[in-house]
Length: 260
Image 1 (cartoon, helix red, strand yellow):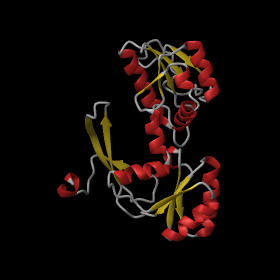
Image 2 (tube, helix red, strand yellow):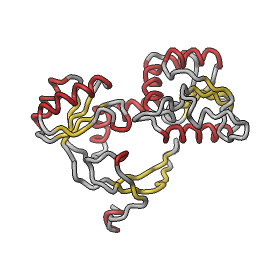
Image 3 (cartoon, rainbow, N blue to C red):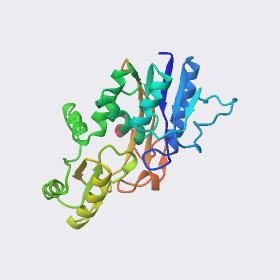
């Protein structure tokens, strides 16, 4: 692979905020260090990764200020003829675009290799039902949950679980379209909004009040894993991370909990 197309972070919003501008910039820097020619698509002129300063280590060779949509991406592919594409550094818009193009056979049509996170992995983690099934395959404990693609099925699932409950949108990073429902009226209101931005929602038992601990793990294609750090949310589950603060490393885990 000599020439790589990177789908950028686009407009700043839930699911593709500043962290994706940073990760995209770092991806450009890493690709340049490997001697690759980098083509960036990002319509947001106010992002760091679109910086064209010659002194910048994360400066792409070619920048297209175009929407990250299948039609525009295909036009750039035709013009630049990249060998590879990176889809996981641009947030939700880039992921959704890449999945649509993958299912349409666009990458195969132009002989483009997907670098880093593969599209099937994106689908497996973004589709709530598939992700739930994958966790069950490895006997990972998760909250009772059901997927629904319409409001009637969501209400049926809610009656099985009981209120309060949590709904989550599929194919939506950062909590867009998600929240806690205390009764059926709230479910109808929130479910309608969630289904307007996503084709599927997950209805699950509420874990509000539980301690929230996260581990940042980097894994390569050879299955080597490195735990970069562990973190603990200052507030319990039920308060969005974006409205809270996170401590690294965790402060209240015992040695047994930390090891287990």
